[in-house]
Length: 318
Image (cartoon, rainbow, N blue to C red; front, side, top):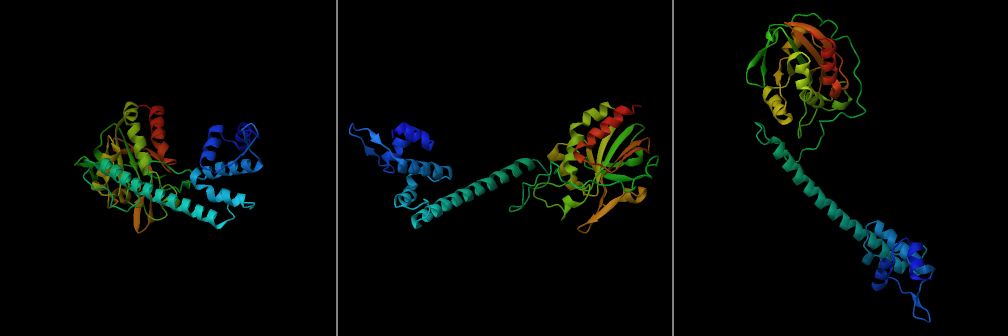
């Protein structure tokens, strides 16, 4: 058969066939007029070169496989030399993977340095899993159920309580003003390089603090336009930890630190325990003139909660 037919049947170009022949991988016969004459064996060899190429084995390393077929074996990898060819390809691929892994680690380190540049806290330690994605919400998270832990809060007076804010001053919750203030309460925010408590994703309502904070950040001006005088996040984490989150996520509002969970004790707010920690369950209070005007509980999904608060403000104008 002619070269064009061989190329068509093997799924390659005529230029590729000539290249294979130049390497001595194909040795076609010659017709009386000098034209090349390819046979079925040449088709099989060319198909094998193409198949090995799809596995990442270069053309010039296919010779042991082709010699195995030429020797009469049904499969090109039935010979010891072919198996050695596989091992060589695997070893080379392993080296490439190790090289890429090293490059990835360097890039992650640069990412951490850039993300924390100007922050008061240092990047995570070398060797930690820095690529945990806290900015998204997994699709299979368990949905929290309403356990009645917040039904008593509507109309409750906010206690005289001062909490340290990330702005450097204490904030009195009973002196937020006559207007509406959004206080969203959350368990804890994760950050790159810092492990979350064991089984965090399996606790209903636990995962999603960073997406929730980003939602309030992105809708901050909309919330003010809809009637909110201010927005605060509140958790039991220390102020320095919260300040890093504010800086890294570029939050336009303060976080309030309540490590003793004083607000929980004053208002009997729902909480849960994990890994030796007692943490707030996720809920949001709309405080107006020192009184709880609206409560959101339970909250799910957390990445859409700022939209829910915004909708309520727009539907209930002052």
